[in-house]
Image (cartoon, rainbow, N blue to C red; front, side, top):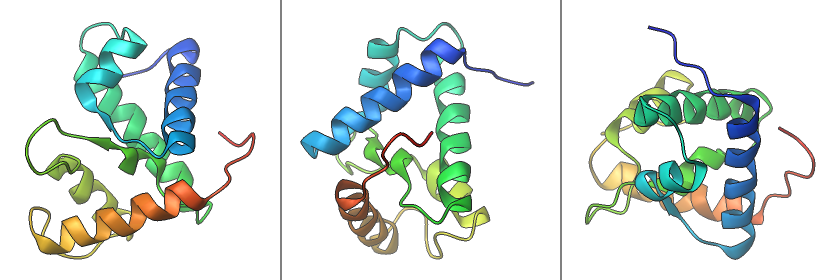
Length: 121
């Protein structure tokens, strides 16, 4: 099944992530789905969009903006699928649900906060 995001929702996603970056805040998947008013299947659409953005950022050697999106749970980390995907991109190596993931995520978020994405997609 192919999941697509509208151009309007894509731009809104980029805007939300940029605002979060500038404010040095993280966003939960749920909050982002609600803010973007994504249609069903909202989580699959958001996941596909975040993976696409991660691939774009990785290709251009930029910090991964998708790291700003986390689960509501106590871990305050992205879902394990995020770490599995970025492992395939060659950006993360380690256990997807342990100290290595938490450490990598903290460092990547700091890099995102410091990086100027300008007008880039």
